[in-house]
Length: 85
Length: 212
Ligand SMILES: [Zn+2]
Image 1 (cartoon, rainbow over the protein chains, first blue to last red):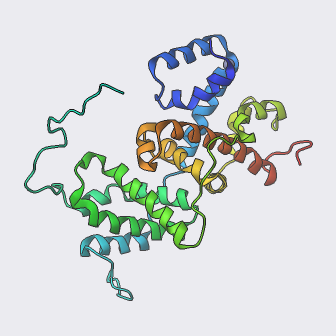
Image 2 (spheres, rainbow over the protein chains, first blue to last red; image 1 turned 90 degrees about the horizontal axis):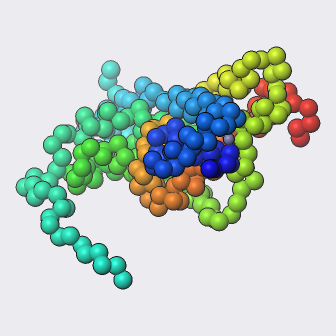
Image 3 (cartoon, rainbow over the protein chains, first blue to last red; image 1 turned 180 degrees about the vertical axis):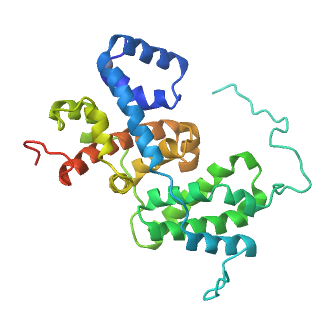
């Protein structure tokens, strides 16, 4: 039986489905008997979700235009060149 | 000595006459631009640097693309190039490439945001204490908190939590053993939890009694 400290260590890996079967089953057995860790698991799910959702950034338009030139031209856009829209 | 013998059955891949990937680079790159930019923003904690890093990454990738053997691994491959580019950028700007000693313990390792919230109870009338705490944070606040995490621990966190890489993939991108990745990831999470609590206290998002 793993304790709360160990359960907390495995928590994010569990949410990522990154635990192997044995450790995952030990974790679930702990959850069956531990209200506290059930609460923390739920909280971790939300915290991870929040961190994930704020991590996406849309490319700023000026950068997107420079990258388009770079990708189309197969190299660096010429310094000082004017982007025609 | 191990009895393992290297199996030389030509697993290195099919012998293609034209070794280059079938799809043109521009189209492949476009699929990952937003993700790549988001990674660079979080990695550098600076949008201007992130713009330089994205362009540098694409230039390097464009040159190396003909040698790419596994087109399915393009996303991880781009992220690995960005990671190396970021290290070079740190060196070029005269900054230390962030490192850590592996065996040093960190006081944050045992920190639990969940437990701290329960003890400090910043919203005494709330039924959803923990969720109310998370609702205090807007995107920019989270960005700030991430920026203060040691980059060595931040990178694994960004790769797995935000970009959905497995721990094994993240270890490959950062070029560290899996065990190292896992312990850094754990520490990154703890620094995130600690950072969120400190940020909330220091910016007056929560009021607590005797916090320094
Ligand atoms: Zn427990």
